[in-house]
Length: 99
Image (cartoon, rainbow, N blue to C red):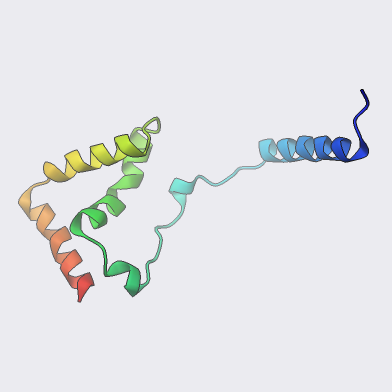
C-alpha cells in the first residue's frame, strides 16, 4: 500500500529531526542555573523545601535511575540526619523569606 504525500512528508520530517537531534549537543537540564523565584514564590518555602532545592541536583547526579519518589525519600533521610546547626541555617532562611 502506497503512503499518501502527507505521510511521506511526516516520515521525512521525523527522519530529519532524528538526524538533527543525534548531531546536536543538547544541554543537560541539571547544568542549567538555579531558578530565580519571585518574592511571592519564596514566601511559601519551608526549611525542607530550601534544603531540597540545594540538594536535588546532587541526588539526580548520584542516582540517575531514581524516580521522583526515591529522590524524595533520599532527601527526607538526609534531612532527618542533618545536624542541628545545618538544619538551623535552613530554618532561618525560611523564616526570613516569610517576612
